[in-house]
Amino acid sequence: MGDDEFDISSLTEAQLDEFRACFNEFDVDKSGSIDADELRTLMRTFGHEPDEAEIKRIMEEGDKDGNEEIEFEEFCRFLLRKRKEASDKDEMKEAFQALDRNNDGFIDKEELAELDGLSMAEVEQIFKEADTNRDGLLSYEEFLAWK
Image (cartoon, rainbow, N blue to C red; front, side, top):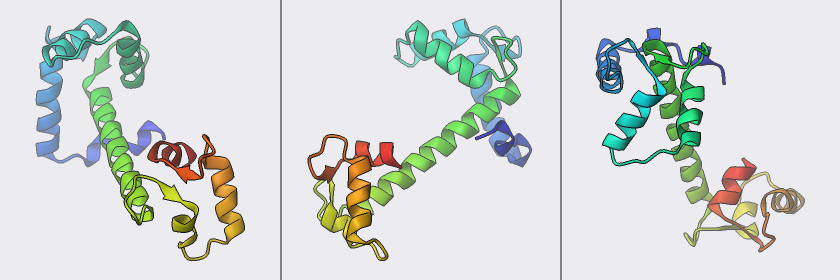
């Protein structure tokens, strides 16, 4: 998924204002960019104690030009990417719940076979690939990993 997919020119004025206010909260020294120390400070403000690996991961994910700081446009793209990821997770959860007809938190072969167009051989193949603990059931985690 490239950054071109997250074009900030499509944001409304209200969305840009919301993103700018959030960015300004992170940009403690008002330099126009967010560095690792500012990110760490803000996360602590919200009660989260990030370790160095987490700070590094977030900075690498947000800092696309490699200058070890996150500028406003990078910040906007980062937020858009995170919103899309959250939306995708919601869609996956809904798909899992739709397949889990008896609401037991698992998809069994019979539930999967109820899908139109899936043969029992296809169901068996899906379970062979996705059912990593070989219990005959697909958990939500297995479903996500397989998809």
